[in-house]
Image (cartoon, rainbow, N blue to C red; front, side, top):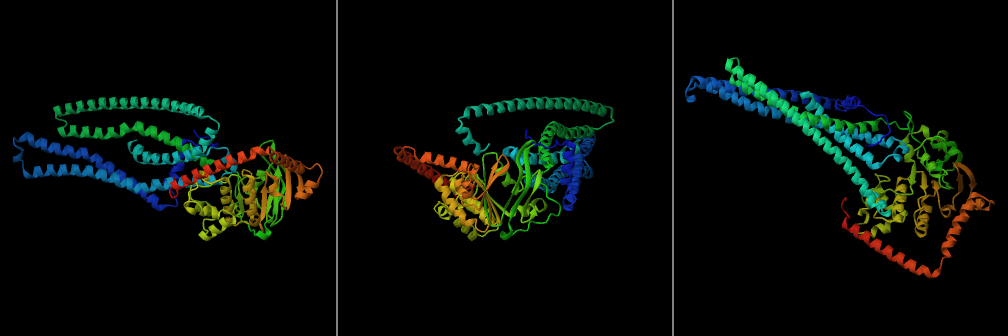
Length: 588
């Protein structure tokens, strides 16, 4: 079960919504296909019903003839011709029924696939329009499963309702976390519990279906026997012929086939409706970030890309304030850093700039325009983000770099790679820019992933750049190299740095210190350090004292540690390079 969080949708609403996709107002060609498919369905049923009648006429002709003649070879040629013609009609009717059914499937296939495609696309677009809070509170795998099962459910229901019932009446990413905490047995037992529950439900379904099928067979057999007995009595009294008996038998067997499937069709339809319920419930979830109708695009150039927060209040949960009356301005082309302890609201400011969240009170302006009043697409085009955890796609390095601007030329991609200082490292890889990065970029080091993220953001060429603790997970040497690359990249761009390590933002034009959702201090590095008892100075001294403690550790242990680290690093690099060689051009 996948918890979506929206209002539950009943089966009638699901079928009504689905009908709008099967019979769309803007697609007369699909409507025509539905009408033709229903016509072919009627033709298939009519020709199928004719089969027993044709067999009856042939039996009656031959039976009547055999009752008056000792040798059928003496039969008049006209009678033989009629019997032959009826039998040919019998064969044509059977073939015609199959032809109509296959044509119906071929004609309606376009409608079914188009409906599935439109619904899946609408769900995909709707998911991207939902606010970040919705996605953070859901499991990614569960959402993917809901969409997959829902679209498969649509396919079955379309087929069952239109053509059956009507006419008849985990991820590789989690493995490392499990191993880190030595919880393999715990996860195995939990998984076995789920399997046991599934086994119990599956057996119950199997037993129920077996009883249902047996009951249907008994009912049909009793009914068939009774009708055949009545038909035989009619033959004895002369009110019915042998052909009538054959016809009744054929009609009953035609009726029995769809009746035998009713139980299965009903069960599958109910399951499909349950799967579709999740999908349509997902579509009914209302986004909190709404774009105004006919909203103008954000008009901004690097020379006028100012950012202004004006008395902004925000809370994720009612009563738990994250930002309280925050006001500040970032001049165009300047570098401003935001620092503070955990939970002070640093990353929230970043997310609000990208309009993942709306403030409960106050306004945010870019180039003098309220971001609520401009188009979302234009706003997000104007802002580039380098996140703390760079998410890369399971594809080539070139693909991941070009993702910043899918219309960029190869030379432009190579240029931003040079600017980010990763071009030479890519060329040393076995397949160069065609090297697969692995799931979420696992085949790249942390520094390489961050350089790809920086290059991708630069390729987007936005007037505003946001750095959300982009180097906090890297070692000091890698961090210093990346920061030196970034200095040239942020020139003439409005830049906002969310920083944990204060050493990375000493050159900022202004540093804003947050404490419990409020601006506690602001100024440049030197002025804040010169302020006695300032929060920034305390943070700076705390971080520097930790660095000094590390440097003052026993010298005799350092060579051993360094050699061990170097050996581990080389071994890991060899493993990565070997794995890259093994699947350089595949999509595994």
